[in-house]
Image 1 (cartoon, rainbow, N blue to C red):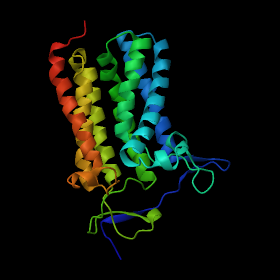
Image 2: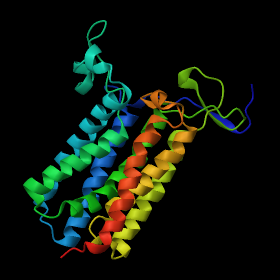
Image 3: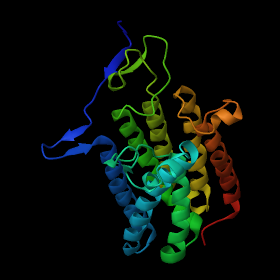
Image 4: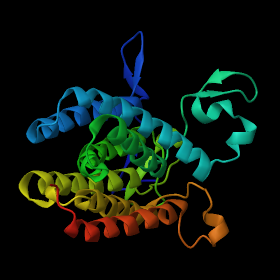
Length: 276
């Protein structure tokens, strides 16, 4: 069948170096963390924060995002793994039907968000000695940038796919053995996050809103999870607890609503919280 407004997507698994293949998804994470380090370095220098505190921030962020995303996926989408294969919850392996290294097959952004908030609480207590909302207002900028790349990695892996378009428009994911177009939901989400990142970047560097504790953090929550909420309408269901709520919304949408509400709260409360 010919689809005039679609294209077939069948990339390799990664960059083959001969002796090792660099997985695209892993590469996106590495670029995200490195870019985030440089972004926070420029922010720390601008605001006179000792750069030796940056290395600790990097470690906290890496652990928070990876562990939070993994645990979030298991709790929200695959809780049966806790009893069926407990080691696979935090290790990239499978012990069902024999031992094998699988890599992590599921990472949830909602879990990563919770992980970052917890990690930043510990970081501000032990290392930064500044208001928690101060670091949250700033760290969301590189987090938004990382979200762009992670969804590109999902697209490269032909995962978190969209619903069938039932038309000539869309992407045919040959890796999945399909011959019909789907919405490139990963790219929709990635493009949405580009705007989230640019808005946060502009707001921090070009306005005085960064002086309002919690404003940028709240803006991030409202924008990023609103993008996620909208794009979920184009995604194929990833399962989770949505069936217990009548399938009115996807699991991702239900999880996004509290973040959006919390974001609006922080933006409103920020009016009376200026940095001293």
